[in-house]
Length: 589
Image 1 (tube, one colour):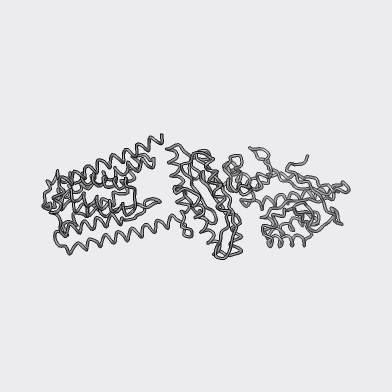
Image 2: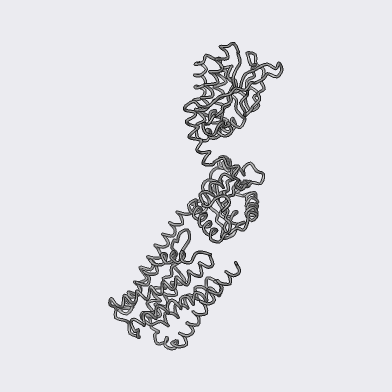
């Protein structure tokens, strides 16, 4: 099928080139000898402007890319009006060929462009001749003449766009009508305006050669305006530091790749790459070195990708990649391996040699989503999974996605459950091993959801930590635990209770005051309360953690880190031997 399409594209381009070149040859043979009679200063000046317009087209924004408008149209049409079809065709074809050869385009593209201009300009000349019975005399400009010029310009414009649109749509596998409409809208306001100027150019030249330099003034203004517009468009769609596409352009490229894949029935991969330990570089060496490192990442990624792929900086130390036209997942994994290897090479910035690796998440169309937003979200999920894998990259898996809409819906339910005091607290015994006696209890929070049943803490506690619900949740468990401890003491059972803390709680400067208030409310000695936390919780921000822990320790609260070995050893009663706890995720019976 692919081979058939290539043959069709070659056949179309070859047919256009053959017909156009044959027509050009016919015009030269039949009327070429008469061209010498048109040689004049006006003709030569117009021809020079045609050549300049082909060599230096206007570069203007076109979506996320550049579009090119040739100002040669104005002066080629002026030659058509003043000197006839054959001179206009010959000059435009010659200027096109010279520009293409200087740009080192393939010979078949040179031939195709010559043929395209020849066919379009010849058709425009035919319209003029039929309506105005064109002679060597300059036509009298009235309403009918202007309408005829408008019709000829429309024919030139539509035929020129149509010939190109068919070729590009075939090469890029785009729907012809959609691309044609897009191209017409792009060229209508520009090429149409250039054609409309041509009668003014002709009249000015006929009146006085001194007026011709004035024609260059609006052209120069147009070039300047186009340059400024292109620069602004580039700034809006590209990252200022690296020059790579930004998040907005990345999203658009991803969506366009998906639309093309939907038509051609192939795959697309969206990758998110997050640099590991980049914050350490900024904090240790400064943002200047961090910026130099970020500038190096783009070329490294581009060096292992195809020209058709997209590399973007999405913000901070996060980069995005769009791989289009993929055959299978094996191809994606091969690219992921190349990217990982490229990132692992040491980066030399000024006099420093840095080792910076990255974690990469991958989402595939159509397996993991049908639009850019979904693929980006799922690549982000996969990226965080990749941080715990030795390969450095991971492909999205639904069973590893903890960010489903249902899960996010639990946030509102959890907030309401905490506010209404709906959470349950179970107490797991802690045994003092040397004497096999009861040393106390550990408080375990459980959520009995009205619709989903019993939800374990490893599902709702991370949600609470991410959304700020962890503070009221911790205070709820702490208050319930101390109340229960008071009941045990009133019944003659002098045992303590342990409550787990998160990093957010340890970093909260108000937490020690809350603990002190609750201990006083239930008339409990601080030694009956043990607060348990992990080593990672403390090391996330040692300075803030130690400030809070020092205040709690000064109050007499027992602290236990990771394996429940007390920071200040105490016995479960008064003298102080270490305890051993069994951390269970299920409530005790």
